[in-house]
Image 1 (cartoon, rainbow, N blue to C red):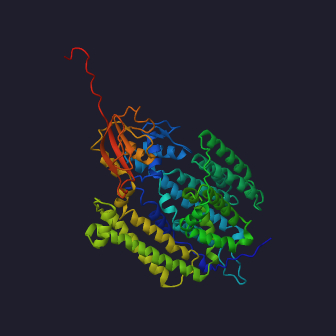
Image 2 (image 1 turned 90 degrees about the vertical axis):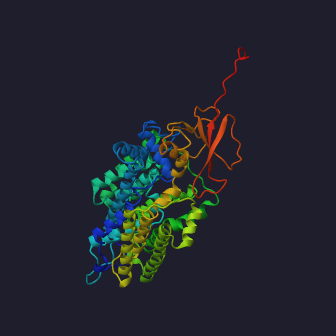
Image 3 (image 1 turned 120 degrees about the horizontal axis):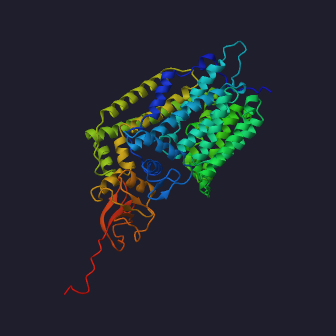
Length: 561
């Protein structure tokens, strides 16, 4: 039965973004931060440490470790980073490890575009046909909708930092995008769809998300069993094979783990996180679900809806976990794209003016702080930086300044283009949000990169250790955070023992946490100095460097008189 379509799209509205402009926008989003950025602490630095442990031969491939502490979950991301570190020895190891994850982010964008394109080609997704012609062509309409999906994904605030890290979640995101593409392309590209589905779920399982892989496989099996497309129904055996392969991979790599941590505060935290993390994709996705509510069983709604609901629910049950929520972004972007042909002009104008105001203010804020650091004006902003990060010395980089100037000029031209007169293209409402997010990331990774490296990495702690700890000296760090151990071992190049207590370790140096300077020193050790990161408050984030006291030679009982 043919259901009425809520989309009214004229031929002039179904214009695609010029390919050069879309590619340039994606490059401005993916490339900044790929080079010149230190591994930032917490998940980014920990993942790099596990990769480096394999690449440097300090741990076996089946058990990457930092200071003797073995990684948990899927090992595929660590293997991938280690392979690139070994294959590109002339690059800084942190940069080499980041390259495959930058390629993964680019792959996510490509897969989301093609997945949305194939979904928009289905008969149920087509707009209303006009009585006297003039409606959008099927392929042109699908291209415009796919362009909107890319813009919605780039505009999602949650992807901004997490999407540029070297963490297992990036490969999980690639697996999700590949899964959506495989289901979407089944009626049109049978071979490519089978390959994508066969790879997607094992990639998820081998990257630490086997439960998501199983749930997605079971849910998609139910959807495809009822599909009106014969090629989609023929995908069922490949889905079953993918589910079995993902379960086997998770079992072989020890990826099964219980991560449910839900409590009374989880739902409010989840709603608060979702409100900004997936903005504006979640709002447009809700509008799509409402306006296309009679099409919930059609492929262009059911496929991305399934791929969005599974990680959304998983994030809720994992105590509002932002990394699980990130996996919903590709599907939410596809759903958001189908809202574009049904949006009212007032909603589109509100999104435009909010984007102009918010992102222009953010860009101005970054530029003023950059001027304050390098010229001393405005003096109040300079005083704020020196108060928050005492002792920071800015570094001028001509290439970074040139990139920031070009990005800012492009933003100004785009704002003028969008607000000069009414535009008819479907994707017009998401141009400014996507470009604004890209501009902020470009400015942060050019004008603010040196300051962010100083504040967000552990390089300052390593620099404090260098004059105090001899090269290749063993450093004991029992019960210390993994990011700190990774920085000491793989950025400072000292062997680290993170498992043995101080009383039994063979190391002559130790780094231990200290609530304040009055923490008693263990017997047999002497305090050498205090370590502190920029912006850490007194009494929090301090570490104490200790050195073993040499044992006094025993006095002979006879012959000493």
